[in-house]
Amino acid sequence: MSTFDYDLFVIGAGSGGVRAARMSAQYGARVAVAEEYRVGGTCVIRGCVPKKLFVYASQFAEAFEDAAGYGWQVPKPSFDWSALIETKDREIDRLNGIYIRNLKAAGVEIIPTRAELRDPNTIYLTGEDRVVTAATVLIATGAAPFLPTDVPGIEHAITSNEAFHLDVLPEHIAIVGGGYIAVEFAGIFNGLGVQTTLIYRGEEILRGFDDDLRRLLHEEMVKKGIDVRVMSDVASIGKSGDRLDIELKNGDMLHADSIMYATGRVPNVKGLGLSEAGVEMGWNGYVVVDEYNRSSVENIYAVGDVTHRVNLTPVAIREGAAFAETVFNDNPVIVDYSDIPTAVFSQPEIGTVGLTEALARERYPDLQVFREHFRPMKHTLTGRDEKILLKLLVSGDSGKVVGCHFMGPDAGELVQLAGVAMKAGVSKADFDRTIAVHPSAAEELVLMRTPQ
Image (cartoon, rainbow, N blue to C red):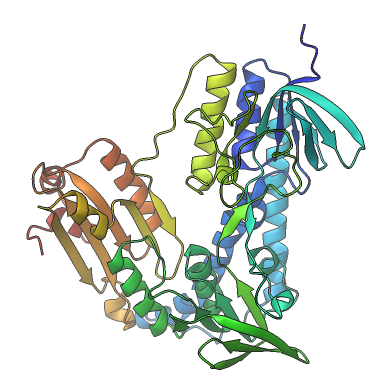
C-alpha cells in the first residue's frame, strides 16, 4: 500500500493536464488535479476557443457586404459587443462544466486552489492551507502572456487575457506583436469595426512561417484597413483622460483607447517551488524534460507549454496522453514532433504543415516549388479583392512533399487533411494522380504541374 495520498498529482487543469489526469485514473491511478483558475486551461477558457468565436463574429461584417453581390438586400447591420461577450461566456461555462464532469467521471479529484511544491513529493494547497503527498507529480501549468518591464506606462496595456472581457469595445486599438495571437486579434477587432494598428518590431509579421504567407497576409490585412507597422516598437505609453498616447521608438505618436500586447508567452512557473524541489529550468523558466516528459527530478514530469517545446494545444494533449501511457500503462510513448499541422485564424486564414521554403531549400538543393495565387470563385461576384495562396514544396530527388502552405477560407480545415497525407509520406505524384474536386479552390492542389 502506497504511503502517499495520491499516485499522481497534477498541477494545472489545462488541456495537457486534464488528458494526463483522466487517462492515468482510467489506468487505475489515484489522481488529483489542482487548478487555481478554471478547469479547461488557457485554450478553453481564454484562448483558442473564445478567440475562434470572436473570429466568427468579426467575419460577419464582410459576409453582409458580400451578400449584395449575390442579390441579397441586407439592411445596415449593427453590432452589440456585450451580447457577444454574454454568449461567449455562456459557451465557455458549458465547456468548463464538461471538463469537470469528465474528470469526475474518470475518478479524478479536482482541487480548486493553487498548488506549490514543498519537495518532490509534497504539495502545498494554498487555498486550503494544507499539504498532500504524491508518488508522481505532473506540472501542466501552461504559459502566461509576456509584458515587457522596460516600457514606461506598461501598466496601461492589456493582454489577450483581458481582451476577452473588455466592458466596452474600443474605437481604436493598438496591438503590439507580430505572431499568431497579434494578427488574429488584429483581424478580430478590425472586423468588428475598431480602428486597428498592428505594431511589430521585426521586418515582417509571423516570424517562423513561410515567407510567402507572411508577405501575402500582410498585404491582405492592409487591404482590409489594418494599419500594419513593421520595424516599429513602443517607446512609452501615456494616458490623457480616457485616451492613450503611444510613442514609438521612431518618434511617431499614436492615440488609441487601448493597447494590447501579444509579444509572446512565458512558462507559468512563478512561485511553484520547482527550483527548490531540484527541477532543472531553462532560460525563460521552462521545465527541462526528456523524451518521456520527465524532468531532472525522477518523479516530477511536465507537459504542454510549460516545457516550451511546441506550444500548441493538440501537442499538450498528445504529451499528456504519452505521459499516462508511459508512467501508468507500462507502454513507453515518445511524441513525434515532425510535420505538425497548424492554423492561424487570421483574416484570411492560414494553414501550414512541414517545412517553410527557406528551410526546405537548405535541406533539399533540388527543391521544387509549386504555387498558385488567385482570387477565389466566390469573389468573382462580390468584387472583393482578396486572394488565395496554395503552395507545395517537393523534394526533386524523391518527389516527396515536404511542405504545404495555404492562405484562404477554411485553410485550417484543409491543412488538417494535408497533415495526414504528409504523415503518410505523400508524394507529388500522389497529388497528380488524384482527381480534382470541381469547382473548388482546393482543386488547384492536384492540378499544379509546373514548378516555379
